[in-house]
Length: 349
Image (cartoon, rainbow, N blue to C red; front, side, top):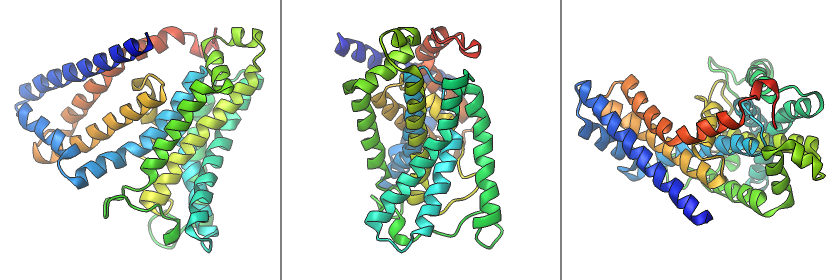
């Protein structure tokens, strides 16, 4: 039964992608461009060479983390919209850990910096979690506010205490042994890919094969029923936000250790916010998030190629990308809106 349901969802997603690309082709044609050429360069930009494939995976990695962070929250009925701020705190903490303990060998320093980023993200998410559990303050509002506070806090700390001399607001580079090894030379694709997949596996196991995962999902389905069955919903809410924030913090950690090699203000193009779309597109399931993030990576890498070689205007390219996302995500969006129509009234029943 479950297999048939999963197969049905996969077939629907494939049909939705094809339909969106066909509609996109019509729009491209009406705008006076060649749809065939545009889609050739979409594919080429994502898979046309080893370097292009590496860039597709590179753009996928942070979205795996942020999409999974949001999905974990959704599973327990929480809307963690604060992954962006948690990502920044994670990146900042990872950079500081790598700089302060630069005398340590890599096999200790890398896990230490990753853990520092995850811890910073967890602690930043814990505050909205505690506010939700103890006072009823809705996490949508508090996490949105904490995005701005977190981003500006890292900017303030960097500019006043940790800025490297020069015009750019950034820390000094982290030590060589703190950097994640590259999988493909000169592409910046690192072992962060395997870390992301490992986290996917851990969360899949947690949700499907542990008592905590059952409690987490039960609270998301019906908080009153969960409490009636003996589940401490406040504890689950706080722990879920800790877990969600830690995963988002890892997104920042891996960016610093694998790509940037330092902390830079405003380095994220919105990974935390895009993670919301990734989670919805992936049906809030760990494996779904993996494939949804990969789809976003394909559209991002291929879209740049479309714009550069097929001369597709950036706005039109964005429309095509948006159509694919909208067509695939539509059922999940309607389901979430239906189930959570009382979001701003605090109705979680």
